[in-house]
Image 1 (cartoon, one colour):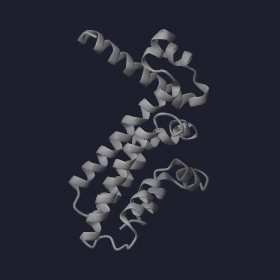
Image 2: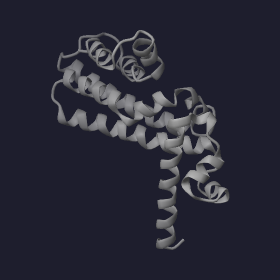
Image 3: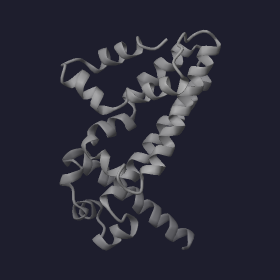
Image 4: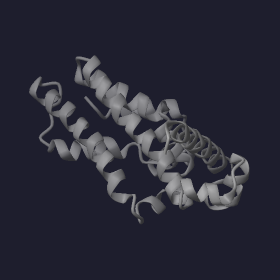
Length: 192
């Protein structure tokens, strides 16, 4: 493709993803059809399928950059903070305010579709990077005596990642009628 055609394709991709995300958030993944996305994006259905083969592929391409951005922010927090407690606190605060968490919370009922299809490996690879970054922060905290736990870093890192599971959020915030702020504040107290 020429540079001009590449640019048109890329811009159309962005438009389709933006409209698909809006529709998924408004109606829910299962209620949106590829026809809805094509119509909203002002493209022919055949053109839509040239860009994305399925709704699952759209969901994946919406979620992946959000997860990558979350990982990038974890890396920045690690570099810019000195105390382990401050790092973990900022990660938790950022995590619950992130587009990654917001989108997964909105689409929680449909996320399993990504872990049962071809996208599983790639998403797990990014999640593993996040967990590895958590592990490095925890290891540094142990070395500085800011974390006093005999639990393995990998275990603590998975636990930290697990707090961003929307099901936990629904159970402890929405079902228990707590505020998001109290949930974040209480979560932070579990960490050094």
